[in-house]
Length: 280
Image (cartoon, rainbow, N blue to C red; front, side, top):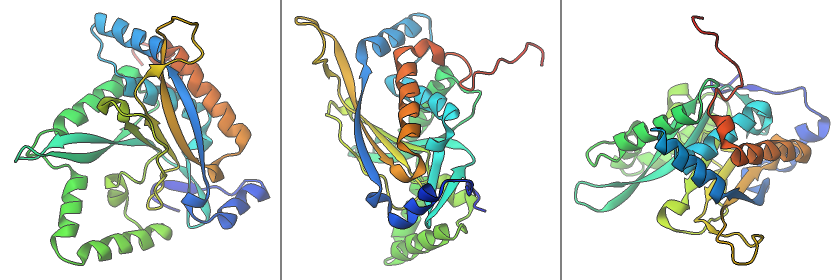
């Protein structure tokens, strides 16, 4: 029993064998391209802003991903020490740019936890609040403070991270450390469109429990659009750990993911689809 997940045992023999056949996450990585209809998402964002609601590309994409994951929970599984676990929460990690006190650019990584009652608006608020807090040049989040402590003494970082890796293998890493680590996450996402850069296929880290990495690239002309059209789409580079789900399960998940990106208005209600009665 791990603090972040429960061992899954009711799996077919071939699925249980995969972590033994491919014990390392980089052995089991599959790459796939996907596309977001930029006209649909941008139109939704503009409409919501006219209504006084703040929504971004990332919040729409994360909301669509999480809603699809609630319907297809195996994409929230992870592998540790050749064992398959069902994660007991959903979170996503991402990198933001910040400015040091001397004015030089820097990066920090944030991790945000989501709940089934979230919607695209609450996700957007969580992202906005965390980004604003951590862009403060004098503010260091808990992850930054932990890393600074580890690198302050020569040789300590190797000891600290080596020990964390060993403890994690055996399910002994404390939940507080797991919550700090951006590498223990349901989804790692990077928005290269924000720096006007094309998408890449980013590896899933061997340290931690990241099973899916999504990279958003800058929007480009849609090659399938009619001649003379200015229609664009945003390319996504997706890297996934093939050991957590079968091909058909991934296929169904991404079909749902794409469906919600094409109809983002479906993300305005609770992502678990439940309705809360007034006064309850």
